[in-house]
Amino acid sequence: LRTLRIVRITRLVKLARVARILRFVMALRTLTQSIIYTLKSLIWALVLMTLIVYVFGILFVQAVDDHRKDPMSAMSQEEKNAADNYFGNLWLSMLSLFMSITGGVSWEQLLVPLHAVSPFWVFVFLFYVSFTIFAVLNVVTGVFCQSAIDSAQSDHDAVLQSILANKQAHIEKIRYLFNEIDAEDVGVITYQMFQDKVTTKEVQTYFESIDLDIWDAWSFFKLLDLDSGGAIEIEEFLMGCLRLRGSARAMDMAKLCHDQAWLIRNQSRFWSFVEEELTRTRSRLDQLTAQVHGV
Image (cartoon, rainbow, N blue to C red; front, side, top):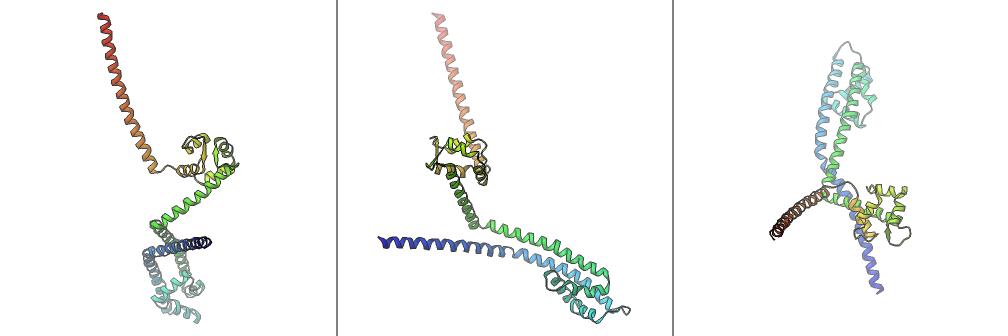
């Protein structure tokens, strides 16, 4: 018997370990799928950055090259070396501009040849950096985040796991709330116990944390007490809070419309039946009245 118990406990421990591993694998799967889902946005972001860097690269290469070819211009050896290293051709200019916004090269090194050409090109470079960092890259980051969110929401397994985890968290809160109201630890909640505790700040905070707004204690108690026994058990309290939390769903509204239509339809039949019976009763009364007068 002890051996069987030990084997059962070992199996439970293995299951707990497998559940933990699956939880981490699910997180890794979500990250991987989100990265793959953002590859399309990454390609278009690279195309956009290439176009921006290409346009500004042509401007800076043309400005530096025209300045170096001008016989009236004078550049020091350090400025000439910087111009050759960073703006010697279109490829080097594009690479330098890309490194300037990704931390690959310092702005100070790129500003040396541009400042030698004209302070105007220094302001153009500052505009390029400000535009790419504060506008383009922020927009690209937002697009990537939105793509990752859409990917996570489209993953049905991840959504299902999130719903189950959220439901489990609410269940734990509701159980704690039940124990908080059931201060006498009798296993049920009476209306008097509920009314005494529902006005406390701590209990109201817990109700708000599970999206429940208790504005009428008696009405809420009757909704939870499905068997009308005058006391709420833990299962009734749990299922009732889960059913009533949050705003009305489409299914709730559809059920309400269906019940209302059913009630109107049956009420119309009832009134038709009542009208027919009244008509028959009136006819019989008229016949009896005529017979009495004839006698």
